[in-house]
Image 1: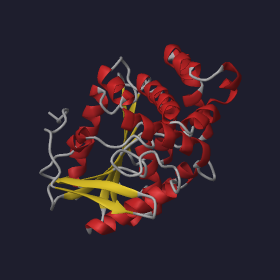
Image 2: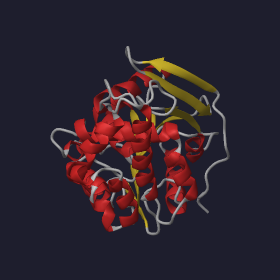
Image 3: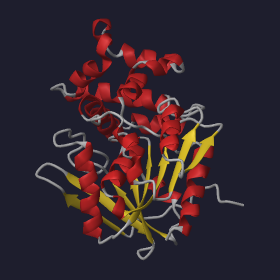
Image 4: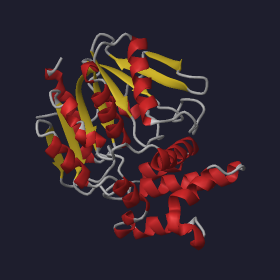
Length: 316
């Protein structure tokens, strides 16, 4: 039977901090087999950061597991920093880390915003990719952002009421700008309160059934501040030109093996984006999990991702 559970917990065999400019220093780690097939885990958000659980999608006897916290996220410093924080710079950060670690080519594994970044990196550096495993597809288009800010209330009205209720009625016509002002307020209490509400909104909508573990993670200060500030920053300032660039440029990676895993009831990143991607990339293996939402920890999503990493052992 194909494996469906995460691999056992594992500690890194190497960790480090990589300065990438005068502002940002990135946390990175390696675990698994130092001589194994390199795989880069790209976390979501943007700004969510990675966790020890993310190492467990990969067989540590086969893979050299590289995890990086992106600019302003997780253990990278400074936390929540939006200056010099763009998609193009994140792509080049990954390239810098690849060279730093002496890796020739690696497999990309990314979900949600991580799928966005994996596509952007793959299309910029296809010669450095062994393949892509993507989950919960997000293509950074205005309609997807508007869905997050306003239309998720059609499925999660209670969560949206709390999200919108943090903003005075006269400012709710532009929730993104209203949150942006508070996430950049001079006092820390205002920033943290807005960040926590934003993060809990996303976490509350990310699973098919309520997940106390996911809600607890969403409420944690480091996660909430990095996620909310950087996500709002990207929603405001870092969309692609043209907007459909990631779909338009799929031809750059169609020769690579690909896997797309999507929850049928993903409300944060609805299935329509995954369907558009698989139509642009018909060679990719496309798995729709019929009883799952957005979170990578949904049982069906988790199983499909582990099975994808197992199948990719064929592409050494």
